[in-house]
Image (cartoon, rainbow, N blue to C red; front, side, top):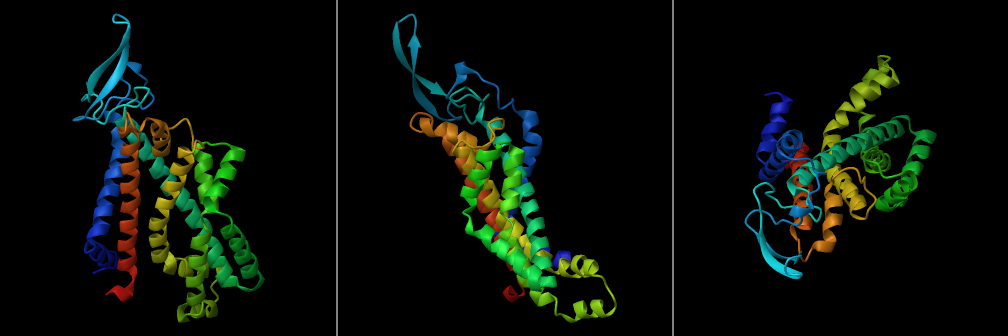
Length: 300
């Protein structure tokens, strides 16, 4: 049995992790093929605004020019919009699919950038030590003193709210935890026999760092990345919810922001993206917990 099969068998025994993995795969498929089967999330149709999901009906008051007054009617969901529409008549299913794509882009790319920066800072600090370690760790401490969300709000407020900038901002400010973890593991690895043997054989610092130290921290990095992705997704959703997200894309936070004022009359606008956000966050957390248990030898 190779090492990959060994860890896969251990992860398979973790039911919550497998449930989380199944939902994440569903999200990836939804983001990849969903747009081919739905209308554009930006199409506006005021004649179909605030339609409820299939199986629900609501009372709506509309002005009748013939009667000269408001007429209350029962409006039922339509199969053309199975999850309903918002206050501008935009299809919520297509908006949720767009939000899925945005959340996965933010979660994966922002976390990837943060992991790369954090891993390089951590391994460099621990391996070289001395003044380099002091400088890098004091800079890390300074970064950790700033409230993460407030720092993001400041950056987005100053430089704009494009999706690319949001991803970069999350990645460039969310690496401190990775740096601390990788530094801690590298400190214990650099005194191991195989590292000392590599130095004795004349291996360069570059080879020792990239061929010995980083590969031996990869399991911890994978677990941390899985647990960091939800934070990145929540950060983007929070920015969008308070009106600092990219207005050009339909993200879950933007949908929540649009639906908060209509929660009494059109509850589904806020509830549906909230459910998607909750399930996504908890799925990544379940998967991260399963990976941590699988890679931990103490859990044998």
